[in-house]
Length: 159
Image (tube, rainbow, N blue to C red):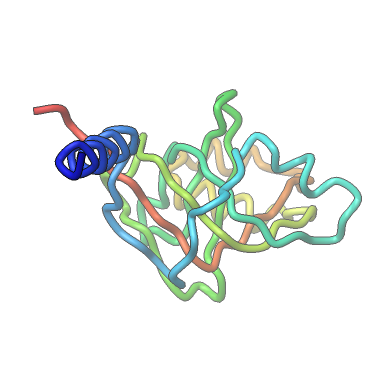
């Protein structure tokens, strides 16, 4: 009976390890808990009717700032991207190699109007052409998400 119990515990441990979708590759900024992270698609619902809200969200990195890694855009499961910046410009994410990776980030979300100068700055960081940058002439209402911590995952490869 004792051997059966040990085998059961080992089997459960192996099953738990096999169900994990990813392994952590790096943590940026503050150490955050990834437990209970909400899908990024719930962002609008979470912010509705509030000035700001503290959230931990998850999604897939679409791209990062190619100049410094000072922002990233993250897609939800519907392909909708949200720009994430970092608290007090206090940390950066990789400028290359993060695209397509799973990410969990924690911080504050709030609705705001992003002015033309900032939109043009983001476009320049993104490598847009002068023509594309100059075409930005109107401010944009959006949800600002300022993260204090980010966890980027690497998908496991099967051996």
